[in-house]
Amino acid sequence: MRICVLVGNPNAGSRTLAAAEALAGRLAGPDDSVEVIDLAGHANELFAWPSEKMDALTGQVAGSEVLIVASPTYKASYTGLLKSFLDRYSAFGLRGVHAVALMTGADRGHAMAPDVNLRPLLAELAASVPTQSLYIEMPKMDSLNEILDDWLQLNAHLLPGRADAKAETVADYAVQILVRLASDDFLAFDDASWEGVLKHGTYHETKNLGVDESVMWGDYWLLDAVDTITQTAPPIAPNAGKDQ
Ligand SMILES: Cc1cc2nc3c(=O)[nH]c(=O)nc-3n(C[C@H](O)[C@H](O)[C@H](O)COP(=O)(O)O)c2cc1C
Image (cartoon, helix red, strand yellow):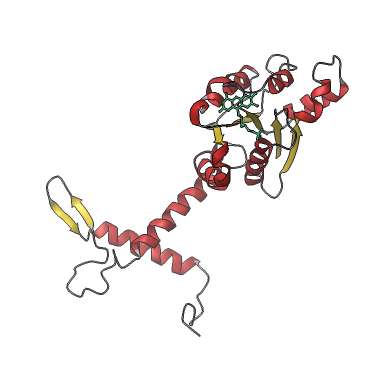
């Protein structure tokens, strides 16, 4: 899959570029390519007609399967630089491209800008924009990885080649639930009088039936999960976890 990063920042090598590249890196699988176009380096030809160089760039962007379109927020919207580049396309020029709108900004004040301004522009060019937009506040750039984690969990499966990402997300949650349930808070293994395996289950809270007890389907799910893991996970060495 070809992933293209298109950055409309008049300053070359910007933080906006870094954020978009980080997202592309996280989306790319081993067989994917990532191409980066930093428009700051092409500003002198933006208004040249005809321009072989610009035609090559617009063709490169239109030929990508996933396009990350990134811009800093300037006056509540994307930059004129980005608009000038996208203005070179004729109608439906980005048909077949899956675009992600990414904008950075000074603070939360213009967080709607990618949805209100950039998304309609991409849709006008017939790009598909299936994911939520990303708006990254500059003071939060230190948390970029966490911001991308959250976004990827909710959105990656909507992009081509990443359908399995949803399954990964569900599997991650299942493991988190299992680890939590396997803690002393929930396991009744040290309570001989407890009738069940998992504590704190509830059968019918409104009717006050079986509240804060064990329920058989909860125990069943836990044991089924443990059974699946013991059958599929690699064997654990006998002394694993013990002090040497
Ligand atoms: C001309 C100009 C206009 C700006 N307008 C806004 C704005 O309206 N809203 C906002 O949140 N940030 C605004 N900013 C701040 C930039 O969006 C922010 O610093 C940018 O995301 C930084 O990206 P960079 O480090 O990649 O250049 C503006 C910055 C400049 C230079």
